[in-house]
Structure formats: structure tokens, C-alpha cells
Image (cartoon, rainbow, N blue to C red; front, side, top):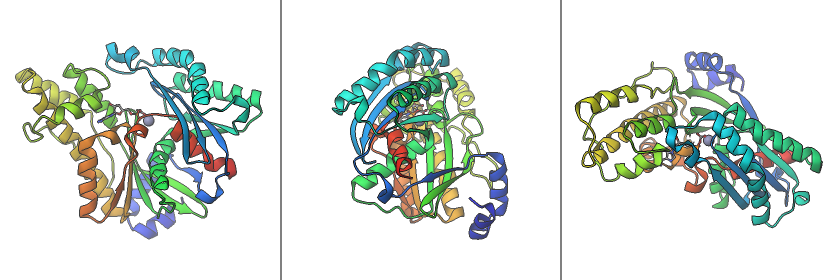
Length: 362
Ligand code: KG4
Ligand code: ZN
């Protein structure tokens, strides 16, 4: 997107000057619902982190199959994803996962019109497995190969929900908060002719929000992945029981910082060892601090840019407290907030096929 146009429109040039140079994260996407090839069957493949996924999507909106093989059991003893193990697991899973996606959708390799695959961002060795497999398949079947940005995939999971509700028009501009184990990013999406352009206007300076959930859960001895476990425990706890510090990142930017949580929790636990009785309060208080920071910075970005629609996606978008608090905060400033269905929050290949669909026609 032209930075000069941006500056005139929103009048906060200092922010965009910094943002434009801080990260070269502009990518372009052609999207209109009319241009999606009718009756096109796309095989989506996802292998960016610790889930091997394959999915068949018809006409860019009907999910015929969505197979996810999770490596959670492999990484559980380490409290986080071990890249080398992830690659090996993808190698084992990719062929059966793709076969199952085809069988579930009652399709054959030959009847697929295109293959969409996650090109990044993600773990290099993990991405290579999906990419090499997809390239070989596309070559052998003589079908087009569509490379998809993983974060675009997460955003498309939300759009699908809206299209299925009959809401085919998304008014621009839109702010997208992508919160997962590897990313905490704010994108400003604008319509650009018949396509979209995204601009990264904020990101985490250190840990991603999901990573912070996972790390504190590990310190509490809860297991992996930590987000869903904390979410569950927190329901029985008091979010105001303990006041964990909220990091403030310099004003005028929409960045996040979550790395301080581990130290704060370590210090707290040194003085107050966790017990089954206090664990729900600790979980609820930690979750509250994380959610506060996400909601506050996102609200700041919405107010500053004047954008009236927010799309939240990625694994952490499944968090109940974040869903409630962000919806509430949006309502208070007249912003519509959209979340993906729970099943499409975490990594899956349906979102990759969905994001690839308009490219087939474009
Ligand atoms: O999008 P995703 O499947 O993978 C990445 O691209 O990273 O997100 C996984 C992350 C993990 O860190 C997990 O702990 C977090 O999303 N997560 C949650 C919840 N469900 C998953 N975090 C907070 N609350 C949840 N309910
Ligand atoms: Zn993801």
C-alpha cells in the first residue's frame, strides 16, 4: 500500500514511517467472491509448525474434509515444539493425512483442480516437508500450485464463517489481529481495486501471545499446549486475585511484549508455591494480564486508525476470555469484532485452501 496515501488518510505519519521500515511485511491478495472459480476443488496442505493438515475445499467456501494430525504427544515432554522432531513427524504424516483428506471428501488425486500450500512463515524444516510434497504432487498431476502465507490463511478462516452466514461483503478497511503460538501481529487490510493489501502495523517485540501462554503453563507444570489448559483452569479462578505486571511498549506504535511474564511468574512462585487450591486464581490472573495487553493495544490501533471492523484469528483466538473482552471493547467504540469458528482457530489446511481459492481464478 502506498504509504503516502496512508498518511494522508489517517494522519499519523510517524507511526507508519516506523512501521513501514520496521518490517517488510506487505503482501498482496486478490480476493473477490465472484472471481472464485465455481466448482473448483482445492487441496490445501499445511505443515508450518506442529500440525500436519490436509483439506479439500470446494468453490472457495465448502469444506469437504479437514484432516489435522497433531504432534502434541511428541512435543509434550519438552513443553514446546522441538523443530527437528516436528520435521520428522511431518514426514511420517504427510502422505496418510493427504490420502485421508481425499478419501473423506470422496475425491481422487486426479480430480483436484489445484494445490494450495503454506509457504511461510513457520519452522523451515517443517515447511519444507509440506512444500516439497505439494510441489512434487503438482508436478506429477500437472496441476497449479498456489503458495499461501500462513497468516493470510488464519484471516480467511474468519471470512469463511461470514460468507457461510451469507455475509459476502466485507467493508474495508479491516484490522486483523493474528494471535498464535508463533505470531502476534496487527495487519491493516485495505481494498485495492478488486484485491486487498495488508500492512503490518504492530507485532510482538519478543514472545508471541500463544508462546507466553505455553511458557507460563510449563512453569506451572500444567502441560502443553498451555493456552487451552490455562483457559480451562481460569474459568474457576478470580482474574483479580493477583496483579501481574502489564508491559507497556512505547506509545505511537502498536507493538506487544510478553516475555516479562515468565520472570514475573517465577518471582511470584518463589514466594507463593502453586498448589491445586491456588492454581485457578494464578491461571485466571495470568490470562487476564495477557488479555488486557492484547485488548488494550488492539483498541488503541482501532481508535487511532478509525477502522470499524476487527478480525481476530490464530490459536489464541479460541480463548474464551479474549473473545468476551475483545467483543466488549469493540462494542464500546463501535467496532464489529469477528472470530473464526473454534475448529478453525488453530492450524489447519482448510484455511490454506480457502486463502488459495481466489488465486486460482485471479
Ligand atoms: O495457530 P496455532 O495452532 O499455531 C501457530 O501458528 O502457532 O496456535 C497455537 C497456539 C498455542 O500457543 C496454544 O497454546 C494457543 O494457540 N491456544 C490458546 C488457546 N487454544 C490454543 N491460547 C489461549 N487460549 C486458548 N483457548
Ligand atoms: Zn497458525
